[in-house]
Image (cartoon, rainbow, N blue to C red):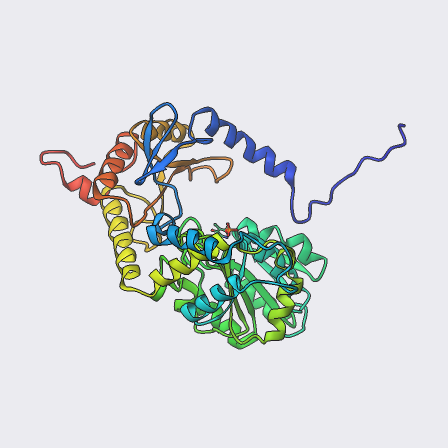
Amino acid sequence: MSERKTITPTHRYRNNDKLVGIGNAFWDTSYDNGVAGVVGDLKDGVFRMADGHEFVNFTVCSYLDLDTHPKVIDGAVESLRRFGMLDHCIPRTRVQTPVVLELEESLGELFGAMVINAVSTAAASTGLLPLIASGHLGNGTRPLMVFDKNAHVSMGNAKPNCADETEVVTSRHHDLEFLEDMCRTYERVCYVVDGSDSLGGYAPVVELAELQEKYNLLVFYDDSHSLSAYGERGIGYVRTHSPVLDERTITVATLTKGFGAGGTAILLDGYSQETRRLIERFAGPLGYSQKMNAAAVGAAMASAEIHRTEELTQLQGRLRANIALFDSLVATEQAESTFPIRVVPMTDETVVEAAKQVFAAGFYTSPVFFPIVARGTAGLRVMLRAGQTEDQIRRLAAALVKAGARPGAAAQAAPAGSVAE
Ligand SMILES: *Cc1c(COP(=O)(O)O)cnc(C)c1O
């Protein structure tokens, strides 16, 4: 029995010992302090827990509150009745009802792209990235795959699969110099990056477009955080600002967050119907059985309709006003950004206690601290939404300041006779 082998992992692209070792202590601390594992019913924008505690969730990514919009809810229910099924479980390449096709046509018109829908962004990236790595989605040349260090985990998880098809490297965040160097060295390069970062900030789409023009660089963007919240008709950051919208730019964006429905949209330009079929057949989970189901499609169809109206502009305006109000009351590094996420600075020692206090005051904000973020960058994550009321934001800001946050310019100026620091 002593002859049985022990396995030594290579850990070239992932390491669960490290991931769980670092992350689980963070989660246990959050859970033990009642700021993770929270359960409650949601009604009229307020959560109510079994013990009667009520709170407003300030860390939900539904930036326009479309997930609770009556038309979106009705859209989901009506679609179920109209199509008479949830998901007809068979690869769509064999047999399908028009349910997903109708959505693809609608979103294609809305975003001015060829759209392929999938059950989630994670599924789409899992499927698309290895096809890009092998050159099947692109010009036939296997590209060097450059993953931005901060690329969302749903993209980073595809590294081992891509590495079996081509070479994979990880770059520093938005390192254009390195990228250009790789473009000079390799026949073809694909850069994998978030269009909009989950802690604020956007991809340098204009500078990347220059590299696209000069070296035929392919860029794979995940613009999940800015779809709906940003741009005309909610087209998102990348499609608003990228000068290159052809086969060299591939974008995926979730339909959950700002869009308020479910599933994801793959946005393509300049690709043929053959490529489309190739994706449907070979892009991993896209070729298996589960598609966006009829309820998610109905919700997305209704949300798309809202995107075509003045209401979207109004919701975006309310979101911007709420962001500005929050920034005037609480100081953060992200203040002034159009992006709806803020990290209210705390220390590793104070952040959990601050989250507890703010939660007791009726607001959920999520603490992030070492070791899941670097030392010295701990804080409470706050996400602004269109549907939060002025009163809720003011009361949250007061609770945050009481828990140790630095007041914003308006709050510092406001109370007569108070001494500014
Ligand atoms: C939220 C998020 C996802 C997850 O999207 P799903 O559609 O739920 O898979 C993927 N990428 C980024 C950048 C995100 O912010």
